[in-house]
Image (cartoon, rainbow, N blue to C red):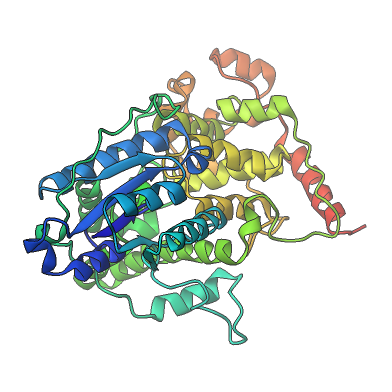
Length: 475
């Protein structure tokens, strides 16, 4: 018997560890009922401590889809709850498993957990092996000429783009899977969570493939031009699928490569722009691998501590989408309504929190972690530290988004704002984009239940520049 431990690879297709386990049992499983691959998933409380309602909902739905795939092939997904080191050790003994395999996760928490699992299996004299699967290139395989990991994305991207990309891997045949029966999945309440108020997108490999197919037929060819406009739908919506691994990165890349082959010269540039976003995802995974402390600490060191204001009332207004800056409030309300936020808007709301409200990026990161279905430690940390000017290859501290200019540029007709801020649906787009400049009397005359701006952007911009200059030790 072989055990495959599913984690962030909730799929059977294009799964390196699962395929390796199936290859190891080979033809023996056809004739021996005590042979085959036992698929396992363990609900780990250490991981659940960092989860949110929307992600647990998506996780359960993805597990249900994966379980259905196994059951269609007369196998099942064995589900357990507890410390993976103890659970996998016990399951190895129960199934008389020769080996336990899994795909690598590069966060610090995951690496510590995996080391404990290896030790526990070693005590049982059970072989164990982990496989590189979630990203194309192993951390440390794309480096500077001096062998150091990159901290500037552009140089990383050039090497990433030119490296050969392996093809997807076929799913194992039914004959390689063990004849096992798993217990029912727990309810979301049994795991200590609640049904999210947000509408979480459909989960599972079939749903992810539908999104890939639809995007590569149309949106990918408009991606370069339209990706910053939240109403134009030129985005893939694959971030949650990639976070949970309901589809493999190789399958996604292959679909984009095929779209590139079909495209015109202009369309090819758009496809490459989307592929560069896959590289960003991998870049941040490498950064996290070599700098696990960035989850709680600034990547960039300043001479002095940054004196964040951390006003609790302003933080709450930001969380509630009640800042009086329409594009910011639309984004924060979309987050709670859909467990998702458009990427351009993520940058806007992150800049507003850290630069206009002068609130520590860690407060924003924690809020996103609670509500986003696609929260990924490496990506979200990288994005927040980019916006806060504390991260690798980050936005320079003196470049501060003007939230009203951003709204006017990327939502000129205020369609996105009106969708998520219903108080403003009957207000002209021009007035929405001028909201911060209107006098209290003018705003009162519009007669809507929408707040005045809680801060003055121009004043806070100057204060933020001074805050960073003091941290840098400048006079």
